[in-house]
Structure formats: structure tokens, C-alpha cells
Picture 1 (cartoon, rainbow, N blue to C red):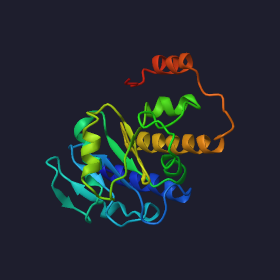
Picture 2: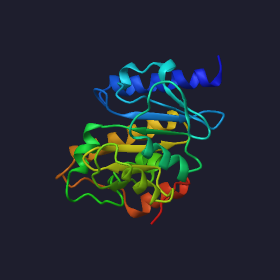
Picture 3: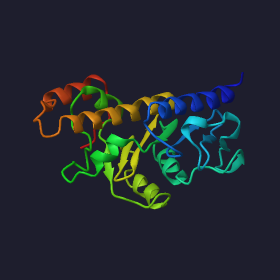
Picture 4: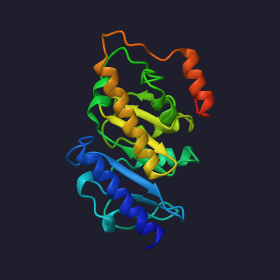
Amino acid sequence: MSSETRLREQICLLAKSIFDRGLTGGSTGNISARTDDGGLLVSPTGTSFGRLDPARLSRFDAAGTLVEGDRPTKEMPLHSAFYDTRSTAGAVVHLHSCHSVALSMLADVDPDNFLPPLTPYAIMKLGKVKLLPFFLPGDPAMGEAVRGLAGKRSAVMLANHGPVVAGKDVEAACNAIEELEDTARLALLTRGMNPRLLTEAQISDVVTGFDIEWDE
């Protein structure tokens, strides 16, 4: 089995796992990953994470030309922005996950650090998550907003829409976006209860101990 065949199957397997656990529904969400030759495999437009076909994934060559498969997601500007600005990006995932979207609708969240420091794991997998404003779905301005971050963030939250996360590979990106959703759920579950957050010293220990990108 070729490395690309394995990657195609892995994309579809992970997407189905995300769908089966209710982290994105219907035909929402999109996923992409780098191939060994510098191209991309991308979920097609209008497809469900629960029913992706490895043979029909959109295939781009290293020059960014669609060479095979179905028409790609309309959110390609988002994916391209991460690949173009983060040399470590090997995969990008975008979901419409319920709890993170709900948290993005609240007026008092920090747009520069969307997730409260409830556990070390979101810090380890995501660093600081930037909350971006609302854009119409498919608006190329979303990609421009990501480019404006100059590669300093591996994850953003699109207000009233959903999270987007880049990782070194497709498994890492999926694990990180699930951590984002879990942390948003914890934030909502403990909202108004005065939860004990990690202290600045504890956050610093996590950032230093695990060599985390943590721009100020």
C-alpha cells in the first residue's frame, strides 16, 4: 500500500470517528493533509465526515492545481492560509463543533486567548487560540485573517461558525481540535461556578516544560 493510499484511508477513518461522536454533523466540516510530494488531499465540498470516500478526495499537486477527485471544500482559503504561513502544518481540520461555537457567542471571552486555562492539555496541543470575527461561509477574508496572524497561531476559532486547527499531521490536527472542543465544553459546564483556573505560574510551567508556542 502506498503512503498516499494510507493517508487517504486515515483521513476518512479519522473524519468518520469525529462524525460518529457528534463533533460535526450533516455535511459540515472539512479536512486536508499534505502528501509526500508537497500536494494536498482535501475533503470535497458538500460531503459528510461520516461518508468520505478515499478515492474521491480532492487531490492538489504541489503547485496548487486540482488534478484529481471531486471539487474541494469552499473553505480552501482557510486551509491554504495555514499551509502558506506555517511551515510545520501537515494537516488542517475545520469543524462546526457545538460547544466551541457556543463559547464563541459569549460576549466576555478573550479574543486573543479564546479558551480559559482549565487544564494543561489545550495549552499543550493548541497554544493560544485566536477568536476571529464572523465571516460568511466560504469568504476568502477568513483566509486573509489567518494570514494576518503570520503563522503565530496553530488554531483559530471562527465566531458563530467553528474552530480551525493545523497540526504536524492529520492525527495531530484531529487530536488538537478535539481538545479544543472538550475544553470549550468544560468552560460551559463550569460557567458561573468560579472554577479554579491554572495559575500564571502553572501555565508558564506547561509552556516551558512542553516547549509550547505561546506568543504574547
